[in-house]
Length: 303
Image 1 (cartoon, rainbow, N blue to C red):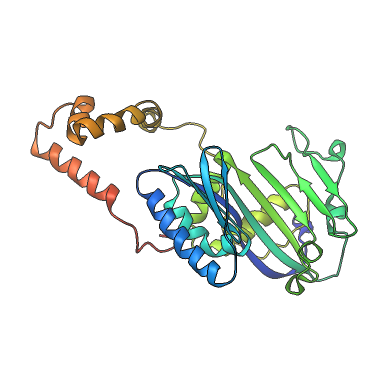
Image 2: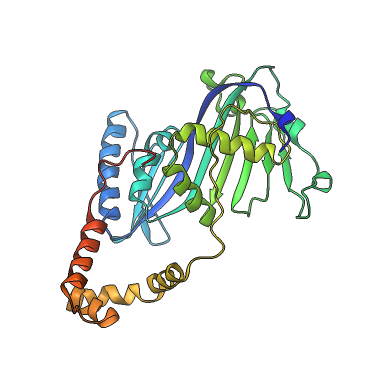
């Protein structure tokens, strides 16, 4: 990493700027709809009008920066901006999966500049990256909204954006500010979200993660935080037990759920794993059910 590419700047904020999660029938779906109703009530009082639309078999309701869809069994929720910053932690606790999460680092450079994105841009043919493929960079220039630098392919699981936040937002609070942003999608989003959930100081972790990512690609960024960074890369090799369980969840679980409705949990479990022969077997099953179903209302960040 090139430490000389540190961009001296005043810290304005480091947070989640976008989050898309999905829930299943295990309880997260009902909890998501309850969360939606509470948030929509507040937004309604603030004057936000509700809109409705359908997409991919889901019926959506939207107010402000929140959109929640449901197909009756599963749910999808997208939040952005201030709403994502305020509610990402609660939504991750409900999520069965995360398909997108954006981490944003906002700073006000010590030296007023409108050319930060142009200074970071280099044609792909000039971007060296060891033995791997060169990094794709795209610079979009706008007199009205300011410049935006995209680092990486828009089709990839991780995409970086550097843009003039002051001109893009036109909000006085962001005058002179730039934003460094990482967009994680698909498996990278889930891994990044998991890492963020266990961070002792999420804001410091976001700042460190975003800064390290850009500077590793020779794009100047603030370096405020010494915190550990989020690793979005999934393990390439799973232990045998985890590999088998992953296969079972995909191949067996859908049909097993239907059988449970007909015959009950115990019958299906005994057909798959054999009868409950000892008290220890029974106790293990009960402990497992109680642990899985125990609500986690008192969990704190970092625990």
